Image (cartoon, rainbow, N blue to C red; front, side, top):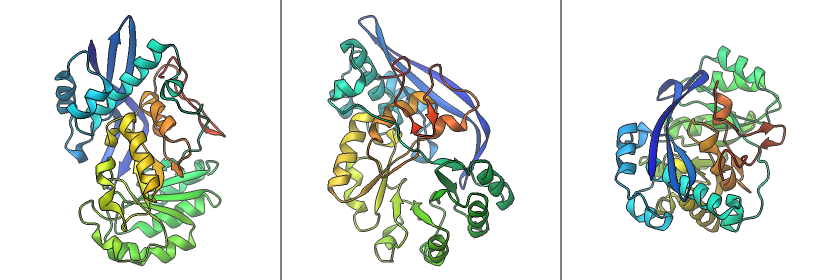
Length: 320
């Protein structure tokens, strides 16, 4: 039996990117019960990709109750609906087998991974205050993507002089803006820029110098999207809600590495249940951005543990 529940988790503060703001994380939780055991998975329907809670729910409701992971890959496309079901099936399989998910997958035991912490878009003054408050974190991810980004970036660097910095422009720049800002990004120690140009309008990236590595986010979904990224991007950002689950996520990660891409593992804003399987995907990643629970004012029972080592693998009572 497959159950679907909508959950809302309040954010600790409003989260703003170039496309808008939110004050809560609205997620769907999928439960799959078989043999007296239930596996769970979470997804975040994302409007940027044409998803709504209703459309994602409808996709899941059309599945047969005995769907397998192999069958799932062909029945649903990559996206939020398949992600929640795929992760719930991995959780279910592990519980039925009486083993941790990574043992069931034949993977090495995972360890903690250092994660970025995201500062949402705001005034330079607000972003400097946020950077100062989080200057102890090893990596800060800065949401930008407007014509007035340099004062914000300067403010963040002033507030957190020793933190590593990555930038997410959320498709908000032009080739000219990227080229103009590059000397300043280098001076301020920015080590990565995510999706500076809109997906589908990013061919110019193949024709300009990229001294600061460029990461594909909205342009990268699953294995099928990788070939078109060669020559334009240096890094791919893998999110389970884009790959359609951990099954495709692992395959996409491995293919991306064989193709010469570096790998970032990211997330939508969700709870610890959404991040838990992504911790397995993030093992050995070049960058990790699994800070969703850190942005919430409330979380699941048995939440992921975050400390100076990073985000730790999940408690078995949460997932896997």
